[in-house]
Image (cartoon, rainbow, N blue to C red):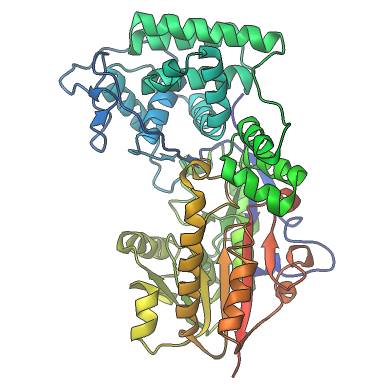
Length: 530
């Protein structure tokens, strides 16, 4: 039942250039690698002070109905509780309280079994046996799946509870235990008897006997409903609003997203997109040519591994995790040796590092970002990848930087802050963090950044605007408005830089999750007149 991720390997811009024989996606080699992913989702709520709990971590101190009791003594090893369930419940709780992200795919190896068990001990007051690789994979699957399917699972839980107050007042740990049980039974098709037994045991030991009885009753009712094929799910019928609400529940997305996509894409395409967003994510590894690592070298190393993160390939700078859709944006920029390039919103720096590796030691990438801490990490990673000689970091808001500096470069990449609606498969939390009101704020910010970026492009130079969104209001409409304000720029068709299957009728680069099985992304290459 463990979650499996496909790893693709690519090397450089040559991988993505148009070819009469194959596209970039066909040139990628897939690897079945079990690993860990990055997921988070917020849910506000507070703990019940009457139950036996402890302060979650230094970032979270107050909860529903009161506070944790930090004076409670740690209990001994508990061998009755499945470690993956205890870790999953605590991690989900930390995520919802805003005190953590499921950062299980990061280069520093955090989110390891040892770290996770430490949180379990501090939160629940006991340890389970150590996590094995299989347990870590189950945690990845359960945490990611539970977050993706949260709206669907909560609908089932509240329907079976019947009393709306029972659900709304449910303490966070109890709710997470139920969500885990529902996900395991309905989506993972685990043996119901084992799921019921183990989640009841967790509720009794971590909370109290009565909580275990409640979990037992609700899960057993779910099992009966599933076996009789009578889960209380809404039907897609009625007016547009009613259908959108039903689809939002069935495919576990916010209603506003469903309505927006239905308007732009139609209902059938919207369903396919939501299905993609709920599927297991795939990750791509970019071989670091700046360190002399070829695609073939990385393939050889991957064939010998179980888990990429634990093997240290990322820590050693031999490769980077980067989706092919992001790599194709760099292909649209088309960095050449000796060029000066500005990356306007550079952190966390994946595109910066890729562009720097393509300069082969000649030229400079100026990485501008408002977040000093993330720039510091970018500098460290650049050293690790041996491309620090062609990267200069600049801590600034690029809007004020453009106003106060006369520097102009050959190429400028504006990878703009956006809704992230193209990466919901990997960022399971994002669907619950975005609001409809965010879209207007983001569009205004994108226009401001575009206007500022024009001041950094030398005559005859190139400005590339990109997002990881599939929303036309953040993409095509922003470029149309930009060209009206700046008529000395024109579109340079992307078909000279990426395969034609990724090029729209207006000459923009666009990757579609449903069509291309990649993250959704957009890029417009704009040439400035001499």
